[in-house]
Length: 164
Image 1 (cartoon, rainbow, N blue to C red):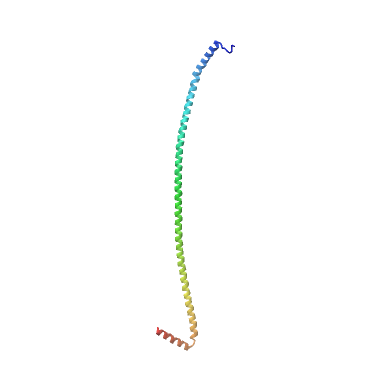
Image 2 (cartoon, rainbow, N blue to C red):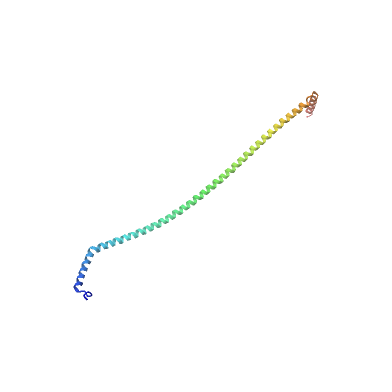
């Protein structure tokens, strides 16, 4: 039973050795441990503060990014709208110029056709006149081969001239 009931000397020496160990731990280990715990606590607090600050900065950056993104979208929409308007104005201007050019070409073609028509009519009249003169000349040569026919024709022409 000695193991179950310790003797007074054993208890005394246990308290003395515990006190010495406690004193040594307090003197050499407790202060560095407390100092390390304090530094760790400060490090954790600094990290928490940094994380909080980073979270706030991220929120600010996110709102800034959203604002910049919405501005970029608005600017893009404005540029697209302006580009469409420019495209439509260029198309309308090209259509107007094409219509004017087509009208000008049509007028020039009509004028050219009329000029060609008049030239053809004039040429035709000249050819008809030449043919008529040649036919009349041939007829007159054949009719006026005799002296008597020539005198009769001259008298008829003189009477016709006097009457007019």
